[in-house]
Image 1 (tube, rainbow, N blue to C red):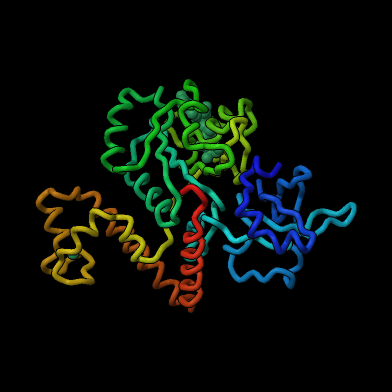
Image 2: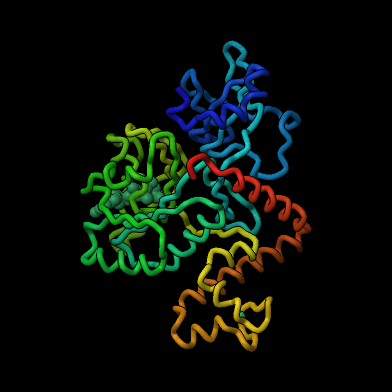
Amino acid sequence: MLARYGWDAAWEAVFAEHRAAGRTPGRVVREDRGAFRVRTPAGERVAHLPGRRRIEVTSPLELPAVGDWLALAPEVEGTEARIAAVLPRRTSLVRRAAGSDTGLQVVAANVERVFLVSGLDEEFNPRRVERMLSLARLNGVGAVILLNKADLCPDPQAALACMRELAPGVPIVCLSALADDCGARLGAFLAPGQTAVLLGASGVGKSTLINRLLGEAVQVTQPVRARDAKGRHATTRRELFGLPAGGLLIDTPGLREVGLWAETEELQATFEDLEALAASCRFRDCRHQDEPGCAVRAAADQGRLEPGRLDAFLRMSRELEELEQKRSRAGEKARGRELASRLKAYRRVKPKGH
Ligand SMILES: Nc1nc2c(ncn2[C@@H]2O[C@H](COP(=O)(O)OP(=O)(O)OP(=O)(O)O)[C@@H](O)[C@H]2O)c(=O)[nH]1
Ligand SMILES: [Mg+2]
Ligand SMILES: [Zn+2]
């Protein structure tokens, strides 16, 4: 019954001690003002965190998020379920919360894949896609680029070509959520029991896509502004849906900004082409800004590296550096490191078949 929601033998093994204690597994499908809607073998339940003393929470990252598997305490007749524990995440998509310097947020837990959605009706913003792509990579979650609203674009092939260049090796799907058979186009990325999350600006068509895949209008959608094709933030909370075809898909509110969060070394790893060039820089710790003998800058000057890519890298390094400074200033460096190692630990536990 829970297999429908992604439960498997590996989860059962992790759950053994909870099973022995009489607890029930359940998956968070939605957060509701401090309470959680959880899918359990007995159907959907509302679950609450117990008093602070029962679960030690030192960071928002430890709170349940949509996609998490929980251990629920044995039910007392007539009461709502109580959350006893959050099972260790296989993956999590963590970002810096909008408008916050250091606050982190789990966008989705235990996802195999993230769809980075853009609308081809708005001005094409490759940098935004690049940032979302970095976010996915930094979190160790496989990305698929989804170019939606192909029906509104005079030349979808050009957009597709540009994207291919920007993101070599990343699968790209170009479609119209309104006109195309979305199940057929996305089925390969939504295998039964696997979970994916939709990420993108407001108005790009995330909820429209969910409704098409569900076969009914469950999610509210809203037309974009005629003036600039900006969305109106129709979706206000994250929610996980079981699709009729067997996959699981999480709808999210439109991103206002893509908050990166990572260690600098990890950022470098997401720019592999840059890293290869950097091996020839004179200084091992070259930051490719104004150091002499910088092979990266030389490549950009000679047109062997797209200047926009170097700019994006430098911008993100700066952002991460500032973030790191703020964290240490607030005396939170140690905690940041601890979180970083925990994030790495999550990533080490890869889902089976990946
Ligand atoms: N022409 C066209 N319109 C689309 C397509 N996909 C979505 N739309 C329209 O775009 C508007 C915004 O779609 P939503 O699904 O609400 O967008 P969203 O990404 O969920 O936006 P937020 O919930 O605000 O983050 C709606 O009017 C949809 O009908 C498409 O493929 N083609
Ligand atoms: Mg929406
Ligand atoms: Zn350099």
